[in-house]
Length: 305
Ligand SMILES: Cc1cc2nc3c(=O)[nH]c(=O)nc-3n(C[C@H](O)[C@H](O)[C@H](O)COP(=O)(O)OP(=O)(O)OC[C@H]3O[C@@H](n4cnc5c(N)ncnc54)[C@H](O)[C@@H]3O)c2cc1C
Image 1 (tube, rainbow, N blue to C red):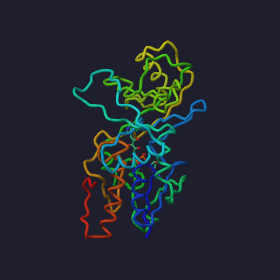
Image 2: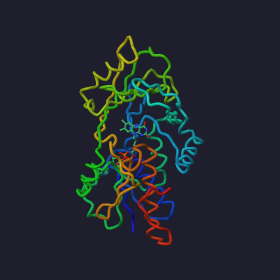
Image 3: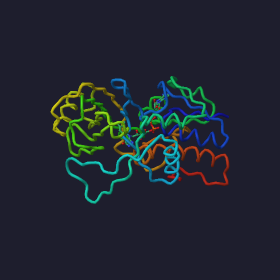
Protein backbone atom coordinates (compact mmCIF):
# COMPACT_ATOMS: atom_id res chain seq x y z
CA UNK A 1 0.00 0.00 0.00
CA UNK A 2 1.41 3.39 -0.97
CA UNK A 3 0.76 6.48 1.12
CA UNK A 4 -0.03 9.50 -1.04
CA UNK A 5 1.06 12.86 0.35
CA UNK A 6 -0.46 15.79 -1.49
CA UNK A 7 1.56 18.98 -1.14
CA UNK A 8 5.35 19.26 -1.24
CA UNK A 9 5.76 22.06 1.27
CA UNK A 10 7.67 21.52 4.51
CA UNK A 11 4.81 19.55 6.10
CA UNK A 12 4.31 17.12 3.22
CA UNK A 13 8.02 16.54 2.73
CA UNK A 14 8.64 16.04 6.47
CA UNK A 15 5.81 13.50 6.56
CA UNK A 16 7.05 11.66 3.48
CA UNK A 17 10.62 11.63 4.78
CA UNK A 18 9.65 9.87 8.04
CA UNK A 19 7.52 7.30 6.21
CA UNK A 20 10.21 6.69 3.59
CA UNK A 21 12.89 6.25 6.25
CA UNK A 22 10.63 3.72 8.02
CA UNK A 23 10.39 1.68 4.82
CA UNK A 24 6.83 2.74 3.91
CA UNK A 25 6.09 3.31 0.20
CA UNK A 26 5.16 6.97 -0.18
CA UNK A 27 4.46 9.22 -3.14
CA UNK A 28 4.31 13.03 -3.01
CA UNK A 29 2.19 14.98 -5.50
CA UNK A 30 2.65 18.74 -5.88
CA UNK A 31 0.73 21.08 -8.16
CA UNK A 32 3.50 23.68 -8.47
CA UNK A 33 6.50 23.23 -10.75
CA UNK A 34 8.84 22.68 -7.79
CA UNK A 35 8.62 21.69 -4.13
CA UNK A 36 8.59 24.34 -1.42
CA UNK A 37 5.11 25.83 -1.16
CA UNK A 38 5.33 28.94 0.98
CA UNK A 39 9.12 28.77 0.99
CA UNK A 40 8.88 30.08 -2.56
CA UNK A 41 10.65 33.03 -4.12
CA UNK A 42 11.25 34.82 -7.39
CA UNK A 43 14.11 36.25 -9.43
CA UNK A 44 14.47 40.05 -9.49
CA UNK A 45 16.93 41.40 -12.06
CA UNK A 46 18.67 38.03 -12.21
CA UNK A 47 18.97 37.68 -8.42
CA UNK A 48 16.80 35.20 -6.48
CA UNK A 49 14.79 36.58 -3.58
CA UNK A 50 12.63 34.89 -0.93
CA UNK A 51 8.99 35.97 -1.09
CA UNK A 52 7.45 33.43 1.28
CA UNK A 53 8.75 32.72 4.76
CA UNK A 54 11.16 35.46 5.79
CA UNK A 55 13.25 33.15 7.98
CA UNK A 56 12.62 30.32 10.41
CA UNK A 57 13.34 29.50 14.03
CA UNK A 58 14.00 26.15 15.69
CA UNK A 59 13.02 25.33 19.26
CA UNK A 60 12.03 21.66 18.98
CA UNK A 61 15.11 19.43 19.50
CA UNK A 62 14.22 17.21 16.53
CA UNK A 63 13.81 20.17 14.19
CA UNK A 64 16.92 21.83 15.63
CA UNK A 65 18.90 18.68 14.75
CA UNK A 66 17.66 18.87 11.15
CA UNK A 67 18.59 22.55 11.03
CA UNK A 68 22.08 21.75 12.32
CA UNK A 69 22.44 19.31 9.41
CA UNK A 70 21.40 22.05 6.96
CA UNK A 71 23.87 24.39 8.64
CA UNK A 72 26.71 21.88 8.35
CA UNK A 73 25.84 21.43 4.65
CA UNK A 74 26.02 25.21 4.11
CA UNK A 75 22.33 25.52 3.25
CA UNK A 76 21.40 27.85 6.11
CA UNK A 77 23.10 30.32 8.40
CA UNK A 78 22.08 31.93 11.69
CA UNK A 79 21.03 35.33 10.40
CA UNK A 80 19.45 37.68 12.89
CA UNK A 81 18.69 37.90 16.56
CA UNK A 82 18.21 41.66 16.41
CA UNK A 83 15.04 42.60 14.54
CA UNK A 84 14.03 46.22 14.91
CA UNK A 85 10.51 46.98 16.06
CA UNK A 86 8.53 49.89 14.62
CA UNK A 87 5.36 50.78 16.51
CA UNK A 88 4.46 49.37 19.93
CA UNK A 89 6.96 46.72 21.08
CA UNK A 90 5.82 43.79 23.22
CA UNK A 91 7.51 44.03 26.64
CA UNK A 92 10.25 41.62 27.69
CA UNK A 93 10.36 39.65 24.45
CA UNK A 94 13.66 37.88 23.79
CA UNK A 95 14.82 37.55 20.21
CA UNK A 96 15.31 34.01 18.91
CA UNK A 97 18.01 32.98 16.46
CA UNK A 98 16.49 33.47 13.01
CA UNK A 99 17.83 31.22 10.30
CA UNK A 100 18.07 32.19 6.65
CA UNK A 101 19.21 30.41 3.51
CA UNK A 102 21.87 32.07 1.32
CA UNK A 103 20.56 30.10 -1.68
CA UNK A 104 16.91 30.68 -0.80
CA UNK A 105 14.59 28.77 1.53
CA UNK A 106 13.32 26.66 -1.37
CA UNK A 107 16.71 24.91 -1.28
CA UNK A 108 15.57 23.34 2.00
CA UNK A 109 12.55 21.83 0.29
CA UNK A 110 14.82 20.39 -2.40
CA UNK A 111 16.98 18.92 0.35
CA UNK A 112 13.97 17.42 2.18
CA UNK A 113 12.73 15.99 -1.13
CA UNK A 114 16.02 14.32 -2.05
CA UNK A 115 15.53 10.59 -2.61
CA UNK A 116 11.73 10.79 -2.25
CA UNK A 117 9.22 9.99 -5.00
CA UNK A 118 7.98 13.54 -5.70
CA UNK A 119 5.98 14.45 -8.80
CA UNK A 120 5.46 18.16 -9.46
CA UNK A 121 2.96 19.78 -11.80
CA UNK A 122 0.08 17.55 -10.64
CA UNK A 123 -2.94 19.36 -9.19
CA UNK A 124 -4.96 16.71 -7.39
CA UNK A 125 -8.70 17.27 -7.74
CA UNK A 126 -10.21 13.92 -6.78
CA UNK A 127 -9.20 11.82 -3.78
CA UNK A 128 -11.34 8.80 -4.74
CA UNK A 129 -8.66 7.70 -7.24
CA UNK A 130 -6.37 6.75 -4.32
CA UNK A 131 -7.01 3.49 -2.53
CA UNK A 132 -4.38 3.90 0.23
CA UNK A 133 -3.91 6.45 3.01
CA UNK A 134 -3.91 10.10 1.91
CA UNK A 135 -2.31 13.14 3.57
CA UNK A 136 -3.33 16.65 2.56
CA UNK A 137 -0.33 18.76 3.60
CA UNK A 138 -1.48 22.29 2.85
CA UNK A 139 -3.56 25.16 4.24
CA UNK A 140 -7.05 23.94 5.17
CA UNK A 141 -8.82 26.11 2.52
CA UNK A 142 -6.74 24.34 -0.16
CA UNK A 143 -7.54 20.98 1.44
CA UNK A 144 -11.23 21.89 1.33
CA UNK A 145 -11.01 22.27 -2.47
CA UNK A 146 -10.46 18.50 -2.74
CA UNK A 147 -12.10 17.43 0.53
CA UNK A 148 -15.21 19.60 1.06
CA UNK A 149 -15.63 18.23 4.62
CA UNK A 150 -12.47 20.19 5.56
CA UNK A 151 -14.32 23.50 4.97
CA UNK A 152 -15.32 23.71 8.64
CA UNK A 153 -11.70 23.41 9.74
CA UNK A 154 -10.67 26.04 7.17
CA UNK A 155 -13.29 28.45 8.55
CA UNK A 156 -12.26 27.72 12.15
CA UNK A 157 -8.58 28.40 11.41
CA UNK A 158 -9.44 31.65 9.57
CA UNK A 159 -6.67 31.88 6.96
CA UNK A 160 -5.46 35.36 6.03
CA UNK A 161 -3.71 36.57 2.86
CA UNK A 162 -0.47 38.53 2.58
CA UNK A 163 1.40 40.30 -0.19
CA UNK A 164 5.17 39.96 -0.41
CA UNK A 165 6.90 42.78 -2.29
CA UNK A 166 10.59 42.65 -3.21
CA UNK A 167 12.12 46.09 -3.80
CA UNK A 168 15.50 46.43 -5.45
CA UNK A 169 17.24 49.80 -5.09
CA UNK A 170 20.14 51.35 -6.98
CA UNK A 171 22.09 51.52 -3.73
CA UNK A 172 21.56 51.01 -0.02
CA UNK A 173 20.24 54.27 1.41
CA UNK A 174 19.18 52.81 4.75
CA UNK A 175 21.11 52.26 7.97
CA UNK A 176 22.25 48.64 8.49
CA UNK A 177 19.20 46.47 9.05
CA UNK A 178 18.53 42.77 9.27
CA UNK A 179 14.77 42.86 9.58
CA UNK A 180 11.97 44.64 11.35
CA UNK A 181 8.53 43.99 12.73
CA UNK A 182 6.20 46.82 11.83
CA UNK A 183 3.44 46.77 14.42
CA UNK A 184 0.05 48.44 14.12
CA UNK A 185 0.89 49.72 10.63
CA UNK A 186 -1.92 49.91 8.06
CA UNK A 187 0.21 48.45 5.23
CA UNK A 188 3.32 46.65 6.54
CA UNK A 189 3.88 43.79 8.98
CA UNK A 190 7.53 42.86 8.41
CA UNK A 191 10.45 44.21 6.43
CA UNK A 192 13.67 42.30 5.74
CA UNK A 193 16.97 43.30 4.19
CA UNK A 194 17.40 40.50 1.67
CA UNK A 195 21.05 41.38 1.04
CA UNK A 196 21.74 40.86 4.75
CA UNK A 197 19.57 37.74 4.79
CA UNK A 198 21.36 36.12 1.86
CA UNK A 199 24.73 37.53 2.77
CA UNK A 200 25.50 39.13 -0.60
CA UNK A 201 24.81 42.71 0.53
CA UNK A 202 22.48 43.43 -2.42
CA UNK A 203 20.30 46.54 -1.88
CA UNK A 204 17.03 44.58 -1.80
CA UNK A 205 14.23 44.83 0.75
CA UNK A 206 11.27 42.46 1.09
CA UNK A 207 8.09 43.74 2.70
CA UNK A 208 5.09 41.70 3.84
CA UNK A 209 1.70 43.34 4.13
CA UNK A 210 -1.33 43.24 6.35
CA UNK A 211 -4.25 41.16 5.00
CA UNK A 212 -6.05 44.38 4.00
CA UNK A 213 -3.21 45.31 1.63
CA UNK A 214 -2.82 41.83 0.17
CA UNK A 215 -3.84 42.86 -3.32
CA UNK A 216 -1.34 42.93 -6.17
CA UNK A 217 -2.31 46.47 -7.18
CA UNK A 218 -1.12 47.62 -3.72
CA UNK A 219 2.58 47.21 -4.61
CA UNK A 220 2.93 50.98 -5.16
CA UNK A 221 1.46 51.70 -1.73
CA UNK A 222 3.84 49.16 -0.19
CA UNK A 223 6.82 50.78 -1.89
CA UNK A 224 5.70 54.21 -0.62
CA UNK A 225 5.18 52.86 2.90
CA UNK A 226 8.69 51.37 2.97
CA UNK A 227 10.16 54.63 1.66
CA UNK A 228 8.42 56.57 4.44
CA UNK A 229 9.33 54.05 7.16
CA UNK A 230 13.06 54.07 6.35
CA UNK A 231 13.09 57.68 5.11
CA UNK A 232 14.54 56.64 1.75
CA UNK A 233 15.48 59.38 -0.74
CA UNK A 234 14.86 57.26 -3.85
CA UNK A 235 12.27 54.86 -5.21
CA UNK A 236 13.02 51.20 -5.94
CA UNK A 237 14.31 50.45 -9.43
CA UNK A 238 12.71 46.98 -9.67
CA UNK A 239 9.73 45.41 -7.94
CA UNK A 240 8.48 41.82 -7.72
CA UNK A 241 5.19 40.87 -6.10
CA UNK A 242 3.75 37.60 -4.88
CA UNK A 243 0.31 37.28 -3.36
CA UNK A 244 -0.26 34.47 -0.87
CA UNK A 245 -4.02 33.90 -0.60
CA UNK A 246 -3.52 31.63 2.41
CA UNK A 247 -0.45 33.06 4.13
CA UNK A 248 -1.28 32.13 7.72
CA UNK A 249 -4.20 31.16 9.94
CA UNK A 250 -5.30 33.65 12.59
CA UNK A 251 -6.69 30.80 14.71
CA UNK A 252 -4.44 27.74 14.25
CA UNK A 253 -5.53 24.45 15.78
CA UNK A 254 -3.92 23.22 19.02
CA UNK A 255 -3.56 19.64 17.75
CA UNK A 256 -0.59 18.53 15.63
CA UNK A 257 -2.81 17.40 12.74
CA UNK A 258 -6.42 16.44 11.98
CA UNK A 259 -8.28 13.58 10.36
CA UNK A 260 -11.36 14.34 8.28
CA UNK A 261 -13.29 11.49 6.66
CA UNK A 262 -10.20 9.27 7.07
CA UNK A 263 -7.88 11.76 5.34
CA UNK A 264 -4.98 13.22 7.34
CA UNK A 265 -4.59 17.01 7.28
CA UNK A 266 -1.16 18.48 8.09
CA UNK A 267 0.59 21.82 7.84
CA UNK A 268 1.22 25.02 9.75
CA UNK A 269 -2.47 25.38 10.55
CA UNK A 270 -1.60 23.10 13.46
CA UNK A 271 0.50 24.81 16.13
CA UNK A 272 2.17 28.22 15.84
CA UNK A 273 1.95 28.97 12.10
CA UNK A 274 5.61 28.75 11.16
CA UNK A 275 8.00 26.56 9.17
CA UNK A 276 8.82 24.62 12.33
CA UNK A 277 5.14 23.89 13.03
CA UNK A 278 4.68 22.62 9.47
CA UNK A 279 7.64 20.27 9.90
CA UNK A 280 6.34 19.03 13.28
CA UNK A 281 2.83 18.53 11.92
CA UNK A 282 4.02 16.49 8.93
CA UNK A 283 6.23 14.40 11.14
CA UNK A 284 3.40 13.82 13.65
CA UNK A 285 1.11 12.50 10.91
CA UNK A 286 3.79 10.07 9.75
CA UNK A 287 4.40 8.90 13.30
CA UNK A 288 0.67 8.40 13.86
CA UNK A 289 0.50 6.28 10.70
CA UNK A 290 3.46 4.21 11.86
CA UNK A 291 1.92 3.84 15.34
CA UNK A 292 -1.29 2.64 13.71
CA UNK A 293 0.64 -0.07 11.89
CA UNK A 294 2.34 -0.99 15.17
CA UNK A 295 -0.34 -0.72 17.88
CA UNK A 296 2.20 -1.29 20.68
CA UNK A 297 2.89 2.44 20.46
CA UNK A 298 -0.12 4.63 21.40
CA UNK A 299 -1.70 6.50 18.50
CA UNK A 300 -2.44 10.14 19.20
CA UNK A 301 -3.38 13.33 17.42
CA UNK A 302 -1.81 15.42 20.14
CA UNK A 303 1.50 17.24 19.67
CA UNK A 304 3.70 14.16 19.62
CA UNK A 305 7.41 14.96 19.49
C1 LIG B 1 4.44 35.99 3.40
C2 LIG B 1 4.78 34.90 4.35
C3 LIG B 1 5.74 35.11 5.35
C4 LIG B 1 6.08 34.07 6.23
N1 LIG B 1 7.07 34.30 7.16
C5 LIG B 1 7.46 33.28 7.95
C6 LIG B 1 8.57 33.43 8.82
O1 LIG B 1 9.20 34.48 8.85
N2 LIG B 1 8.93 32.38 9.60
C7 LIG B 1 8.29 31.16 9.54
O2 LIG B 1 8.70 30.23 10.23
N3 LIG B 1 7.24 30.99 8.70
C8 LIG B 1 6.82 32.01 7.91
N4 LIG B 1 5.78 31.83 7.05
C9 LIG B 1 5.01 30.58 7.12
C10 LIG B 1 5.74 29.42 6.40
O3 LIG B 1 6.00 29.78 5.07
C11 LIG B 1 4.81 28.21 6.48
O4 LIG B 1 4.58 27.93 7.85
C12 LIG B 1 5.31 26.93 5.85
O5 LIG B 1 6.03 27.16 4.67
C13 LIG B 1 4.08 26.06 5.58
O6 LIG B 1 4.43 24.83 5.00
P1 LIG B 1 3.27 23.79 4.65
O7 LIG B 1 3.93 22.60 4.11
O8 LIG B 1 2.37 23.65 5.83
O9 LIG B 1 2.36 24.50 3.53
P2 LIG B 1 2.74 25.04 2.09
O10 LIG B 1 4.13 25.53 2.07
O11 LIG B 1 1.67 26.01 1.74
O12 LIG B 1 2.66 23.75 1.17
C14 LIG B 1 1.44 23.27 0.64
C15 LIG B 1 1.71 22.71 -0.75
O13 LIG B 1 0.54 22.05 -1.22
C16 LIG B 1 0.43 22.29 -2.61
N5 LIG B 1 -0.95 22.00 -3.00
C17 LIG B 1 -2.07 22.65 -2.57
N6 LIG B 1 -3.15 22.11 -3.15
C18 LIG B 1 -2.73 21.10 -3.95
C19 LIG B 1 -3.38 20.15 -4.80
N7 LIG B 1 -4.71 20.15 -4.94
N8 LIG B 1 -2.64 19.24 -5.49
C20 LIG B 1 -1.27 19.24 -5.35
N9 LIG B 1 -0.60 20.11 -4.55
C21 LIG B 1 -1.32 21.03 -3.86
C22 LIG B 1 0.84 23.74 -2.75
O14 LIG B 1 1.21 24.05 -4.08
C23 LIG B 1 2.01 23.81 -1.76
O15 LIG B 1 3.25 23.55 -2.40
C24 LIG B 1 5.42 32.82 6.14
C25 LIG B 1 4.47 32.62 5.13
C26 LIG B 1 4.15 33.63 4.26
C27 LIG B 1 3.16 33.36 3.17
